[in-house]
Length: 222
Image (cartoon, rainbow, N blue to C red; front, side):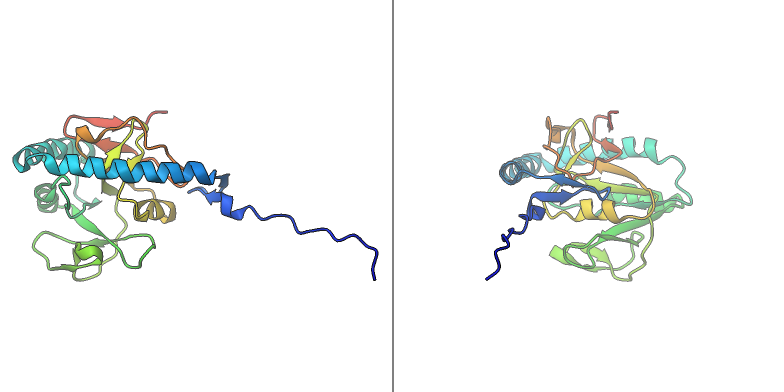
């Protein structure tokens, strides 16, 4: 029988680490993360309920204000590819702006879930072209035409002064921003009433360049 002492393997703390968008790892307190995720679920429900409670006519007017502010940021659209989104659950409806961009010579696109829990793709689409139901029955272009947008619009459930976005919790948009190989301008889109003090950002959260609302433009603070 050997008299050598037996040294146990070092404990693995990989489950307590989370990789951020730049590839680095950060220690994650499991309890703190659980608390934040629980808070986000409750806040997400509160904000969506509040959004749906806004009369449709009032939402339409606010969407028009958002479109005006977006036009200030778009500049000349010919030659640019702008990814919009299909409005759901009371989100600002920018389909009129999409048509105006297409008529002005810009290329429009829509985000597409091509694989569950994978980054989104952006497929070119113009108003009037056929659509089909994608994941969660969200309309997507019937003909896949992947493009790399110059500008990406992302609807927000909530947002904070640091331009962090509270989304629906699926993580698709954060995965997309982390994996994207070019550098589009990323603009969050939402009603000014969706502003909150903080989303309690976690290592995987990526701030947007700006948040565009019906009352103005929230810039990323330095």
